Length: 140
Image 1 (cartoon, rainbow, N blue to C red):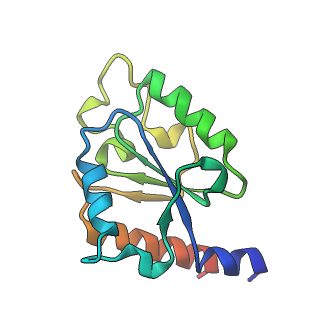
Image 2: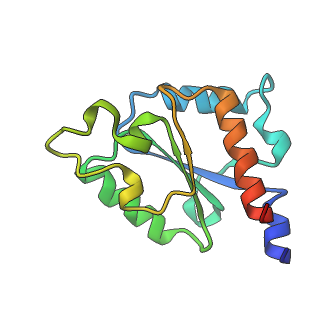
């Protein structure tokens, strides 16, 4: 395990990028950060700039306009960057997959490392995804 990988497993900075969400995923994400679930015990903190992020968390439906901006955010991120798709909309397109302005789920355009399904995903599912992400970084 390299030094950079060792540091990443102890302190992941997450940038949240919302496409066209209903905000249920956002509320559950914020609930996960509260002391009740305490995602910060894994070293996870939300950052306000993509330039300081190690992980991009995508939520909502990424229609044509939102996808352009999500790709731009992904390109501006320092590499290596990990990507989490949060919720059914980001993972599969959900009920909007047949929409005229939704080409495909966001994973077809941006490489996604971890999928967290659910509508909305529960905090326990997000914590399990973070644990999988850390295990993936450690190479297990």
